Image: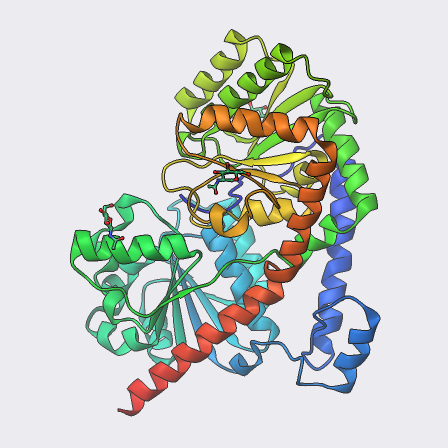
Length: 468
Ligand SMILES: *[C@@H]1O[C@H](CO)[C@@H](O)[C@H](O)[C@H]1NC(C)=O
Ligand SMILES: *[C@@H]1O[C@H](CO)[C@@H](O)[C@H](O)[C@H]1NC(C)=O
Ligand SMILES: *[C@@H]1O[C@H](CO)[C@@H](O)[C@H](O)[C@H]1NC(C)=O
């Protein structure tokens, strides 16, 4: 799946301290959010106090961009409910809409047949925040779809729900459907998923590259035309920014993570944080890492001890590929420099501990690649493939360095690793520039602004459709 920091298993038990730090942080954040929602739904966009005063004196002018969604009924259709990128993003949107007083109903099209802990806890999280959770099938879902002001389908696969549940009502619902698409793989271009796509009010896609790709592929493969398409870059959650901007918390997390994997404070860590799979390019990254060590030896460069960390390991899911990675490490005798970490939902401790993020997604790259903006929030430079959403996030030479996908990219990534290892000042400056870029365009309120424009447009369109 071309999603963002997809991560599945909760934080390892052996870091009670980290959990305490994060817990107290998130509790504080919840209070902050409550406080700001309580104050007439205004929200301060800057954290300097001048603006705060501005907000209280000019209620409305700096109001939440989504405020017009107040009392609107929104139906969210998710293909699944898991800790992967797509559903989590839709949940974030659900909470943003609840925050402005919209009535939000969630349905999950594909539920596990067995009771599932993750699904259960996510549903409860939503119920706690006032999101209603209905069964995907049955009259209640149909009635809600017919009554809703807006229906948001999340991912291409969610398209299966339309015919299966709405049946003859499909044409009545389509004009108020916004289709949010986060994927960019061939098997999503299936008629059974997307045949209604041309007739919905709009499609919302995470990057320009992905939008172009969808336009091309639907046309060439299926002979259908995309509806009006909006590109909406994602933003970092407030919770993540809160940790990223708390240097005390970061220091504690950094110490604990480094200690747990046996890396000293002064060592340099290059990390890739993605589910381990060939598409994410961990194999090529390890080859580049090995090449960079060779270059450093050959040129007798003075650099700190270097480590590669691979966060997102799952021996059960990608066994063959995982074994291949480990064999490579053994064969090249770099076991003491390469560290594998299991999948985790909580990427902040790792972002706090590493020095450079590597985004090595192959082929068409990431659809957006949320981990990239998350890393930039932590002032990390990014070494990324020149493909997909990464190119819309990373400014080559300023906030990171790009290298080609495929085997051609191995040496160029190796050289970039050496560059950042040898030029401390450059590395730190790139991290700072990345952080500035996040503050300029990849925050939650930026995403809300962008989504607000789309929702307004779609509401208007469906209203004029209903009137005609
Ligand atoms: C669409 O994709 C095909 C094959 O990938 C490519 O040859 C063609 O130039 C693309 N068309 C546009 C308009 O980008
Ligand atoms: C990582 O996952 C594997 C199984 O997938 C498990 O055996 C191992 O104990 C896990 N490691 C940690 C540190 O949790
Ligand atoms: C990135 O910048 C480097 C020079 O700093 C250049 O050699 C490389 O071609 C650029 N890559 C892309 C994809 O723009």
